[in-house]
Length: 275
Image 1 (cartoon, helix red, strand yellow):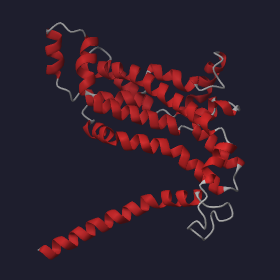
Image 2 (image 1 turned 30 degrees about the vertical axis):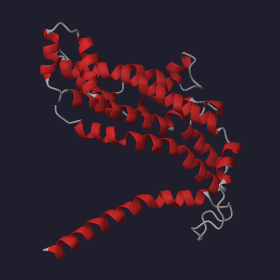
Image 3 (image 1 turned 90 degrees about the vertical axis):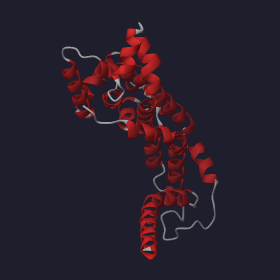
Image 4 (image 1 turned 180 degrees about the vertical axis):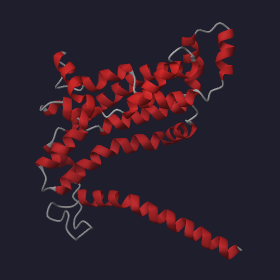
């Protein structure tokens, strides 16, 4: 029995190690390529002959990386804040209020999740063009004031798991719905709020289609995803610089996730699918 347990332990950890190598392999390849010379990149020599840390400085010298980072952070932060301001009240209403058409409203939210953005891209672009807001990131930020279908759905699924006894007791004490939302629901829903906030932030940080459609041709208004794609086009032969730029773009997201992974995983785990 002891020998069998030892074999099971070895097999279990061997599978974990194999899976870890599968996920870490591309990351290690990018790191090593980013530190190579241009002549060695993408050759059969996988280990750098010399460590060229200056590749990262050259990326900053050849591109507007700091400007792209600032634009991306502004886009992701404002979009996430606006999304929370609009989606939390909508999810609270769908989870707590029973009114005529509430189920239809929830079905509309689900339908909006299934609608590809490319279907409505042309009419929405014409609207923003008439408002004079194209060639900027505002057409991607301002719509978040009207909520996000996926965030509303996820928050609603979590809020319906909170017992109604808390809100009923507060309502008996004379609390308004706004006070109930701010003092009772929000503290109890912090894991779910953190989860949807990280989902929104990561989506905006990695968004390529939206900035490609609205940011225009001026590099001063680009985001990191759009700038990285054009950087690859401009320096298509210099794969060491392309990999170095890729590392610089993904590093902030990795750092944010490492610090917030506990509350993120908790929020995703506690968010049920109760109907």
